[in-house]
Image (cartoon, rainbow, N blue to C red; front, side, top):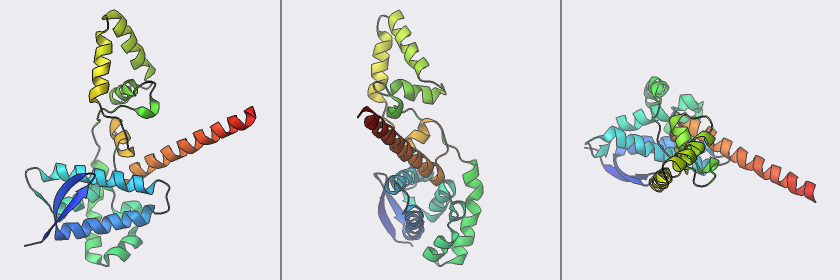
Amino acid sequence: MNKVVNVNLGGVPFIIDENAFEHLSKYMELLKIHFKHMEGSEEILSDIESRLGELFTEYLGSRQIVEITDVKKAIGVMGTPEDLGAEEEWEEITDNSKERQQSGDYNHQKRKYQTGKRLFRDKENSIISGTCSGLAAYFGVADPVWVRIGFVLAGLASAGSAILAYLIIWAITPAAKSAKDRLMMRGEKIDVDAISRKVKEEFDNVEKQFNEFSDSFKKKR
């Protein structure tokens, strides 16, 4: 009988057996090493933990304890050491060649996995609340301006009922707060590479906007 450990992933508590916890801890240590020099590393690791928690919830079903097969399956989805090009770091962390050979069986799972879309408010492309831009992302509308026009026209034609619908959607729809949320909003694959790429893009966009603002301010002077 294995011992169990209580862990928290993305704010969700889990009971995980000792072998699974050891394997998961080594994987998270690998990711910390892999991303330690990247801007936004804390946000990347937080989003990865949150996604792992979602995967464990999906795998558990009626079970209560996360097992090592669940951890290995989740790693297969998120990205194995081989996928990340971090075999040497993994070898140093694990010191267990047999376990490394087993981890190579997960690549096909990662290639097949793709998340479904979820509805969020897109605050990054918002005018008021991000509701219309979130709906545009969910339904695959390239430009959210068409959704905004649709609400305006519907509001004029329906004596305000469309505005009420807008307010209800605004109230019940969460904002996309993390890179993981923004990937889910567009139905994109959620793995380590996708999360890290999204976070990097967002940091680059902020830096670009700051530089543009700085250049504009200097010109006015």
